Length: 435
Ligand code: DOR
Image 1 (cartoon, protein in one colour):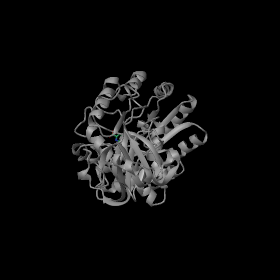
Image 2 (tube, helix red, strand yellow):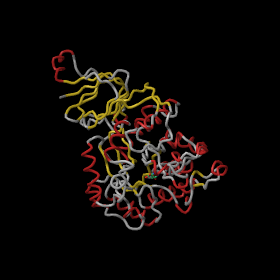
Image 3 (tube, rainbow, N blue to C red):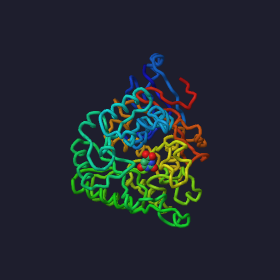
Image 4 (cartoon, protein in one colour):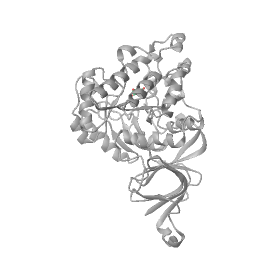
């Protein structure tokens, strides 16, 4: 049966569409987008068409998160592929790419196949596994890239850990490039960050906490840009958090290098000043930075230096977080707050809505070469419907994610995903839809 979504403002950056339009899909594929798709003359056909009225709402290509941590296999008490996928569709995401730092690490075909099987069983969001660069992400020996590609990974990363060995990173970039897959770099020089709890600066000094200097990130951003340039390959820089990284990436792009980059909502929403609460929910890697860095991240998003907004969804259990700050795990559970926090950029005028949509759908799809991120005819019917006016309060205990580690409990948001359609099927609906 055909489904017609009518009355919404459709934003599809790939087709440069921003207008109130209809969209028609059937059998999981988009048929077309346009005005008055059902003409009165053909109104007798409408009985065969499911019509969903979406007046006043915003309709975008399904949101895509290319940096998420599902904890299965191995740490199912933090998150499972099913619980993470549920959190994804509730957050408005139709596709997610999961980092390999599970236990065991996704460094071989059997783990990749396991993740894909579990995701198919969950039958919620599309889940794309990312394979490890090095065996056990230990940073010494490359994984079998070709085998992992055949098994279905969409990128390579040791995220959670940096690849400290520059020669290994060089070979990873060369090999991945020849396979047409991106390398996603967690940029951190651990000799500079070792023992650090938070951003090095004024607040680490007055709080007496050991700092992680911004150069721990920037030195590696610079190195990886140099390797990508030297080897004429490409690199995607993960979770960018500092003004210096943004300057380096901006310059690299200006010189025509194949560098892409992402940031996450906490890096444009919170500063290291918040660490005065000592809340371990604020402990994240890279750490929350200074107000000047936050300003630079927003500027980087606005001028295109930062291509994508990712969640860096890092769910942890209470036992990982209710500890002395030093011993608490790094990470923020971000799947269900990412869209709301990102829409704040639009409310404050830092980013136009179509730009935000591009950074959360089209650009992530392009970075990972996914056949997604557009509402063009023939594309998969992956659609997110957002109520841009809906005011709501973040309620962490009611997250669908098992990870309740969020510093945003009680924050007032405006704008929320109310309908998430994956492959033509409704996977989440907050609306009482008139179907
Ligand atoms: O805060 C973080 N948490 N940063 C990372 O790089 C890894 C992640 C995790 O896996 O928990």
